[in-house]
Length: 255
Image 1 (cartoon, rainbow, N blue to C red):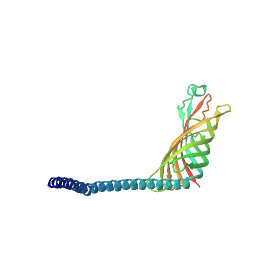
Image 2 (image 1 turned 180 degrees about the vertical axis):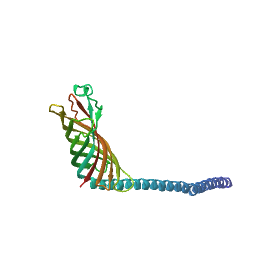
Image 3 (image 1 turned 60 degrees about the vertical axis):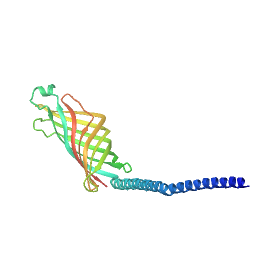
């Protein structure tokens, strides 16, 4: 009986030892859990806060871009509309020095008669874009007042044009610096009255063709547009003259 008691006692001590070890292991694991897990939780919290801050930054940037687009769209609505304008400049007329007309006199290689005209059309910007389209009709007349050429020389150009317009804001609201380029179709007439000792000889020509427009512009207070540019007209040739570029400055008022 004593042997059995001793065996039971040793088994009990063994189980108690195992339970004690398991208790220590459980306590150690609990300690690890209590000490380490909060560190990971804090790290995850920081990551979450940073992610929230990043999302908030992007939302603010998107909202700012949205406001800019709406403001630009409102400005474009103000600048959309009908316009009229006045034009002043010069038209280059080249003289054919090898013609029979020029052989018996001293003439310059070219003359630059005064040119003036009017225009009218519609200007529309696209959404919030700084780009727009301008459709308009235009008349330009050029008349020779050169003392070196006694002939009466004049030309008239009537054209229908489509321009691509681009404006960038400067300084104050409603002020823009821009450029334009476009094409069109026009009818150009040429008239010359050649003076000689016997009588006056009248010559006239007409040509239908394409035109090209290019230039720069400045807009003041939304409504006032000032431009400087070059126009390539349909060229009209005859024995004595040929027409080159038109150098133009203009003012437009937007309704």
